[in-house]
Structure formats: C-alpha cells, structure tokens
Image 1 (cartoon, rainbow, N blue to C red):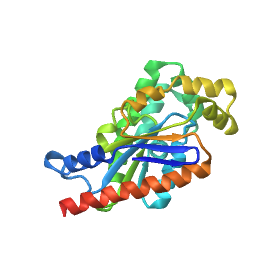
Image 2 (tube, helix red, strand yellow):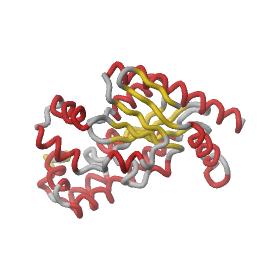
Image 3 (cartoon, one colour):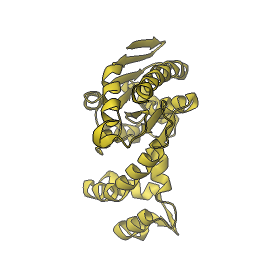
Length: 237
C-alpha cells in the first residue's frame, strides 16, 4: 500500500494486519470481536489524534487512552485514591486531581512515573479492551495511545499505525497549542524516538502535509482498513 495525498503519505502492508486478526480469532484469542483492531500511536504534535478523529468520523469504534486516563481519575475513583496516597495532597485541588502538578512531579522523576503508570495503565488497558470489544463484526476498532508501545499494549491490537511528522512541524504545532518552545522540545525529547516506533509499525502515516491532506489520506486509510475488516468477517462467518 502506497497512498499520497498532498504532503501526507501512507505506506505499509495489509497482509500482516489481516493475518494477525485471523490469528486472534482462532484458538485462545477467539473471544475477541470479529473486527479489525488497530493501534494508532505517535509522538506529541505528530497528528495522531487528528488521524483518529478522521477514522472515528468515518465510523471506527475508538478507545482513546487520553480520554480514558481522565475518566479513571475522576473524583471518588479508586485510581484517584491511590494517586492521592502515593503523591500526597500537593497534587490535589480538593477532591480533584491537579494534572499539571502531578505532571511536573513525574516528568522529572522516573520512579514516580513508574508508580503512576502502575496505577493507571492496567485500568486504561481494561477500559480500552471493553470499548474495543464493542466493535461490530466486520468493522474497524481503533486504540489511540501515545504509549501503546512503551506500555506493552500492542498485544491488544492486530496492527500498529505510527504517525510521524517533521520535528520542526511538530514544534510549530505545539507552540500553536500554547506551549513554549523550550517546553515543547523537552516533551518531544522525553518520548520514544520515531525510528523506534517505526520499527514496530505495520503502517506508517507520514503527516508532513496540511490538515486537509491528513483528512483526505485518513479517509482513504479507513476505506482500506474497512475492506480488510469485511474480509475477516467473511472468513469467520
């Protein structure tokens, strides 16, 4: 597969995705949905969330790790209680988590980040699996997760789409969101490198173009994924 729309380019093979889905629907993994389940990941500012939004508008069932991460730490939840015990009242505003204060702690302390991930990642994984299980037969499910690979969640999906963009373009997008250039550079530097992500990619979405290019290429991507999802349903009946 090689699709180019303006500055957006899509490369990869559907063969591995289809094989993985068929394997999942056989033997021990047969309880999964008769659908194509795809992970979408990429660095901050790459356009990952914009691509997921396009796929959702096309009809994909989406489990968004960022949204789930906010839901599981709402007031009164077990995860929030554990975070309060681990990090103390300094990260709380009354009964609400102050994500900015928590972020400053874990950003500079690897052990604190590991402790936070131990609290949140299993819950995110469980909720995402629940959402993806609702994907109708013959359709496409998307798991949008920035740390899909780092957190070992790639085993939940049939294939991985990695979204990339040129560093300068990513930096510009983050500054337009309100970040300072220094903060944006730090955020990018602390994430997995694109070369590492691409080593795990079944599909590479090169988002070097405009938002319009991304949308047009995203629609074409969905059409290809849906075709594969239909073939999976036909194969399994």
